[in-house]
Length: 243
Length: 243
DNA sequence: GGGGAGAGATGCCGC
DNA sequence: GCGGCATTTCTCCCC
Image (cartoon, rainbow over all chains, first blue to last red; front, side):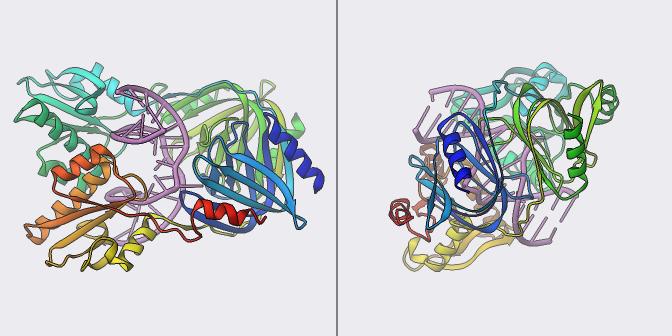
């Protein structure tokens, strides 16, 4: 066991990614407080000094510490502890390691960044470039604007030269989306001294409550799908068969 | 390399948690589309069939597949692939494994659940049980109510028997918090036919913009901290010095 | 560094 | 299953 401690200690000094499979108990104190009784988990410490703990179930880590945390591994009363402290964030974690199932320390080389298509920005681009998706004679002026009126997805004029604000959502629009749109419309009305500003939610779907609130406020809903670049799932299936 | 494939294949049939350190290329197609060029990552597949991929930097996984995904490992043109498919979600991922740095397969035993203190619910409980934190003679009626008016944190009457709605936030209250409160207040005013309903944000802090909007709408802000159970960070520091 | 908003958000709970 | 909402959200981008 002392050998394990030495390996982790050495790895913590370098740029290794450390992966530990261990039976452990975890205590956290910081933004909240948590306690996790004894059980088997996977612990990862990365070279940027963040730490994540995964139980054998679930997508999200059960415990974690942010980038820039200090880590220390030591024995006390013949028990092995990993103590992690993030001074700036006033957070800390103590993992008591009852038993180590496996340990890997390895310098991982990866300078690549993920490319992602189909985000809300792509959706507003699509609408900007195809204004007829909203309605005929819609003239978009800008997109993804950090104006003093707020962060507006698409912004333009309709055929009557009435200002139109469009809030895009990739999924079913919720009450939040409507209140967000409402905030923008009100702000721009006030700042520009306009009586009439149209607000449109563009999304593949909208919840019943959101639709009701939308109508109560005189806003509109326009069905619109986020763009797909390589075709749908079934097509992809076929294509992937080539591999 | 074929031995690695066999080990993963066997592990996928059982209840093992699989941890792979590998140089790989990742393609994802589903709710969005993504591509990640060659680099070293840690891949975890859990017994509930979810998969997460971690680069050697950052807290969040760079790619993932949800619980219930089917995984297949196979060779094609002498190249090793891990293909993951979630039929119901219409999502899939293909990981090309160029080189395996390490591989661990282990059945992890963990039936424990994390206990967390200091959540927003704990905060509304605290206010419910200590109404003076809001003001003298505040009479709370309920908390965490899933009423037809919405999900209201705390709900009660002030000394003038005016209805009071309190929205709690663990951190700095933002514009969202104010619009949320506004939604509740308006809805309850309308449904109960009341002219005056007070709205209060209880949070440790509030952003300047949120405060302005709050005041514009005649709502109030009351500084309140989420409950701490084991004392603050500095005290904890001292206590932890015992280790 | 704080504020504002998206995310392939995830997870929880209630209907 | 959907809906509404918190999250130790995380991450990005802009001021």
